[in-house]
Each structure stands twice: as C-alpha cells, then as structure tokens.
Image 1 (cartoon, rainbow, N blue to C red):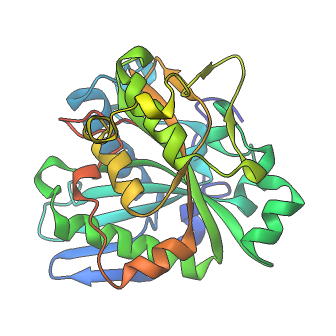
Image 2 (cartoon, one colour; image 1 turned 180 degrees about the horizontal axis):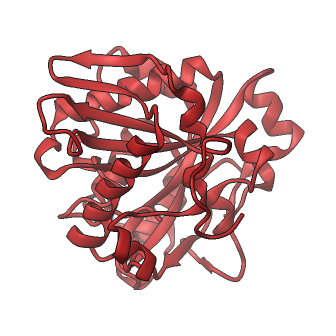
Length: 298
C-alpha cells in the first residue's frame, strides 16, 4: 500500500460500517464507529490538531497541506468516535480511537506496532490457546480527545464504546503503544526500570522491541528503583493502562516523528470485564498525547 493511499469505499473499513449502531448515548454525546469517509477525515483533522498543533509531532508537507494526520492504516482500521451533536457540523467529532482487528490486519499490511515491536510471540499456538478459541487481537492507536472534553464523563463513554466493540468482535487481548514525551530515554530511566521489574509481559509470550530500535528498560536493579517516584514519572496514559492491569513489552522505541519514546502495552480483555462494572477512570490519559503529559502514540 502506498504511504498516502487514498481512502476509497472498496478499502476503507468504515465504509462497511455505514449502518454502524450507536454504542453509547448520553445527552448530546454519542459513541460509535465512523460511518463514512467524511467522518474519517474529521477524525484525522482532530488528530492533527492535537498531535501536531498542540504537541510536538512533526507533519510532512502532505499533512501540513491537508491539516490531517494520515497514514495508510487509516484505510483499513475502524475509527471509534465521540460525537457532540450540539456542535456545528464539521466540528462534532471530539474524540477518537483507531481500532485494528487481527483478522483485518492479517488480510492487509499487518499491525502498525510491527514497525517497532516483534509480535511473533502473540501469533504462536501457546498464546492463541491462552487467548481462547475464536478470539482475536485488537490493536489500539491514535487516541485523542478535544481539550474541552478531557473529563471523566467523556472518557468513560469512549471506553464503554470500546467495551461494546470488544464483545462484538470476540477480542481476547488488546495491545498498542503508549508514549513518554521526548526522545531522550535516559530521562525515563527509573520509570522504565519500574515497568520492567513490576509489569513485564510474561516470559511465555514476551513481546520485545525490534533489535535495531530497542532501548533497554532494565537499566536499574529492582532494589534500586524508587517505586513511588517512578510511578509519579509515568505519563497519564500509562498510568491509566496500569490501572486496568496491563502488561508492558521488553524495550522502548524512540519515535522521532512524534517526538516521543514508546512502550508496548498488552491488556487481557478479561481484566477489563472484571473492572468495568466499577468504572473506567482514564480521564488523565485522554490522549496518546495530553498537552501536559505529551504521551503521544505514533
């Protein structure tokens, strides 16, 4: 697929979702999948506003011209939207998450995360057995919420939508990348060591950064880590995923385009199910890039 392939009805996943049902509705806010190419473009525009204008990501000339965050995966992903029906047309999309199911990834160019991490352990029989018959992986990416909507109510609606999607598509595990602001991994030495020693993906399906990009996270002995200080240093999105009980891959990756250092997250859906009745509280991690935390996802 060309790097800037146009989204066409024959390839755009959202086109097949023209009749996508509403997952959640609360007053003027609705959560559902994109139903048209136009809605995908509006989601890309929101991403551009947050990642490239509010934060430190560097657009190429095509993105600058279109004022949209675009990559080839947009054409095959589902785009989960938060829509405020009280806003003017063209400005109603106030939150988005990009979702890529395993069955779709395998039919096209694979997962986005494979550009940074070796996902082979997640495709082997031992992991597939653990995931369960008939279940599949889901890659999360490009999450962002408009600055005026970064509150518990909006974020909880977004995650309720994700929960409905998980049930509809028999998802066993979710994964993706969360990010630390900046391209100097040494600044996150203690936080990385904390994640490595306390929340690493189990050995039998350990995902590791590609060797030519890998930044070691095991930089300190476990006894030398100040766990409280390390937790304070974690970006809000990472804290949010930790509250849901996620695991982290081995090795970080510097993403120069987005000005971040990425870590891999893996989250069993059963952990979400066990916590969902209580409440999602990911408001601090509303974006892969919060204006304060700059936790961008590439």
